[in-house]
Image (tube, rainbow, N blue to C red; front, side, top):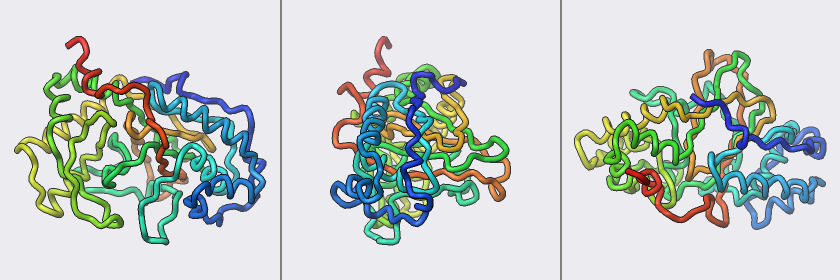
Length: 309
């Protein structure tokens, strides 16, 4: 298992946190959803938009090349969601399809609240892409460490799609890669978006949709048909191969570290937290859509995996 890649770390020389108000924990982040909302919010709070835009440009550039994620250090985010939300809104457009006005654009994730599913355990401990339960998954996922786990748990795990496909091809054969781009699977759609299922292949030219428990949910909740009797066994085998890959990157997010992931070109997870009920780990999270393609190159991902085969 590999450590974080040096070329994935972005050390930002300017602490932007001093520019935020001291108590912005009650900041209404839905203001960021308005057209050009991030610019308006930054102006209202006196945030240095030029510096934020310079950082946003660097992040976008990192997301377009391997390993398709970046860890940003040195920013300083203050006490709440203000700077985090404005930065997200300058990287792209906050992805927030929920009509319910009580849904916030950013949220805090805590281990004790992590979703679980029988047969899968803690869902965030499996490599996944976000929003597989949305009709159109988001382009970018942002995770800011507000406070790390005091026992060193919750180590971040990252695997680029290119590395994942190479691993699958090496250990399961090219036929397994073909299945990912050829088998139409049922994906349970979030109840907040109307529920039901969407049928789609996991792997396309646009990237990967991967949260196997969404397929399991569709089967259990809606009786959705699978393409083959061994489909769930195959999915679990792919999951296990990816999670045990020597190509997997792992690193511990410290306070104010920001992890930004190209949600089309990389999978992410975290390892177990020893005591979820007492863990102080808090991670601020949001999803972003880009106005342009999140990855360079135009060929299908599966074609790259099959090169030289």
